[in-house]
Image 1 (cartoon, rainbow over the protein chains, first blue to last red):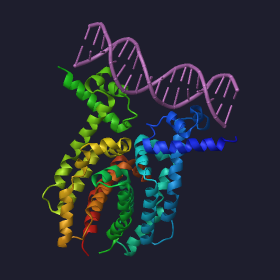
Image 2: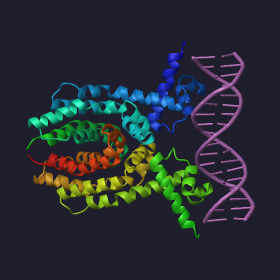
Image 3: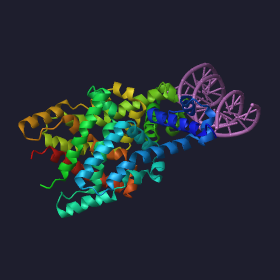
Image 4: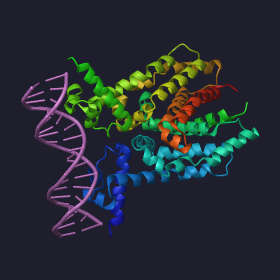
Length: 202
Length: 202
DNA sequence: GTCTATACGGCGATAGAC
DNA sequence: GTCTATCGCCGTATAGAC
């Protein structure tokens, strides 16, 4: 049990990195073992199977990275401040971990059942309070009456999609990695503005 | 040479369907052969390898489905009409073929090099004329000065992303397939409105 | 052009020694 | 807990008969 915690962590970390880079199906357990610097059999010792390892990693990635975002969505902030915070926090999170979106997209395509079963959805979509806010403010007339489902989809689309097509954007605009990041930073202000503007009464 | 054209087509069609449904990596050549009702060896006879078959199919899918969209973008329509037509045509195309987005997302994750090499980009991003229009109208003051790169990203994000997370949207809102399609139809008007609103001077 | 048969390598997984 | 060795399976690809 001495090196146990350590080895398990090494496998976990190596697999996480490889799954995100190459995709689950193109990563073999031998890849993982060699990257972790451990023996092939240990993967099966700690995690029962590759698929089980993947489940563990996937759940971890989602819950870890969405916790703060959920907090913002369910906080007591006013609508404008909430939107601004959410956009900023989401973009910061993805900038720190730009492979998360393509990885997640690939997984949706790969195993829908798994995703719909897991808490993933409530993690990404715990929007009751936020939706209610939009409806309430619409009734009060502070903002235009807005369909919360469409609004939320608009919001996460504009935030996350650029990361899904990052290679295309970079190639098309001949961007370096830094330039892409600048572009993404610009989007914080831009996306917030678009969202607020389309809710404005008038 | 008699049944040749026919067999090649059968392989092509079966593979296209399987690649889109299960993903390229989870589709075996045996799957393809059995679905096409032909023998395993024939895949190698007509297409040199699975990877080569995939390239053929991918190029075909992209060029076929983006031709009309490119035409609209480079047409002589006014900005508002152009945006409206583009949104409608894009959503119609994806509704007819809802697996196209998740498939394409998975491919970007799988093989970036391939994508940036191919004409894919110019097909998806032949936006010079469109961008120019946005800049020109901004200078004239007909619309707000708008950054064309961000605007274009906003547009394709809001159009395509819902298809990428279709299972999540359906599960969350307890939608049937028809209800999802209704939701998507609503987005035609909604997205157009958001885009036009955020360009409005005022 | 189409089929049968098969080679070959890599995969995930486990038994068993230490 | 960790390693070596190996199993059985399935993937792609090809040789050769028809």
